[in-house]
Image 1 (tube, rainbow, N blue to C red):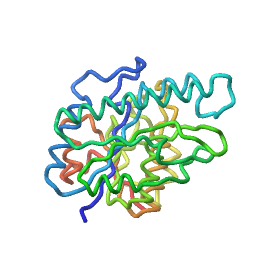
Image 2: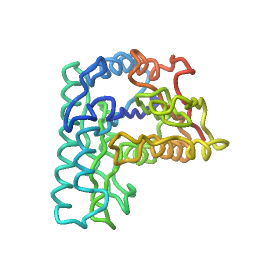
Image 3: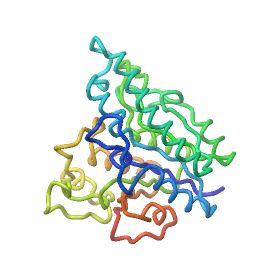
Length: 272
């Protein structure tokens, strides 16, 4: 069997966070990223599952209707449905961009294969994803609104979804693509004194989580870098996979990360 990689593409990279339901329009787009994925994947050296964030699609609706609070407001059910649909809308766009490149992408909405309890994905069935991998597909999941045993509904970030998948289909690598060069002691876009952290393991994870800044300007209902790092470390600690957080907006960086040829100064390694 080939090694399995899980790749997370941040919603902040592929959407315009300043405008609801709007794709990013710079030099980095869904299409340019998928071209890099396709070039690396064509080497035949690994299997791949992609998870992408919701960015200005799902996050804006989720925040507006306070979906993560559960079914406690008058419009909670309406908000849950709208948030799911907008997240799925972005997923449809993502799949269509892959089809233009003749990539064998296949969509899987987490709400349809898993269940949450008090905001954590606790059960589900990954047989569909395993079969898709065996048949040569690249499954694509995304952050989603989940049916929740305790709260009625809750938000499952892409990180939580990939963590659930990792516990059921053991990966070799888990790669988180963001718009900064790994993990820093603070948000480097807001704090010029932020320092890059090259490796995070059991010896420094607590300090990293304590000092890693959450953006004061972005809408992110899933908690920002601190939550992402916490979940990635949990995934790696539980499954033995090696994690990477890197700047996916650097031209060629995604391809190099998948092929294992990237400059180690430009990403953070997360391990048990």
